[in-house]
Amino acid sequence: MKRKPSQPEAAQAEVVAYWVFKKLGFEVSVNEDPSTGGVDFAICRDSFTGLVEATTLLSSTIATRTGLPDGLATFTGSFAPVNASLFGKVSGKAKQMG
Image 1 (cartoon, rainbow, N blue to C red):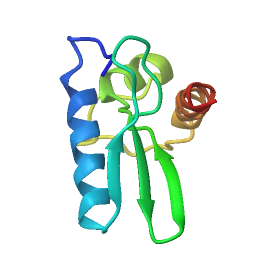
Image 2: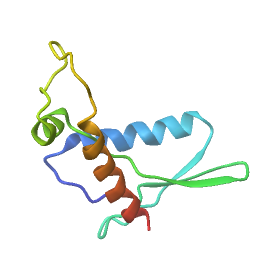
Image 3: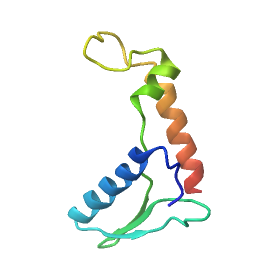
Image 4: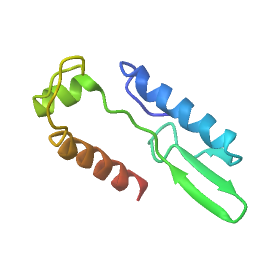
């Protein structure tokens, strides 16, 4: 899997996604090419087939990009600023999926 070694959260997200789909009864196969990247998994159950891309949104990255505090203990505002970061992340992953 192609990922930055400094982001163990990405690997953890992939492990969680893999096991969630396995527990839901899907056949899960690694779909990503280690040299070029790509969509993480192909899944299949009954007549359904699909692709799965796992990703992470780090709270520190969201704080930097939106100005929201890094932590929720004292936060009492709107999460609306997160939408643009989330949309950007999902759009980038959609391009990766082809």
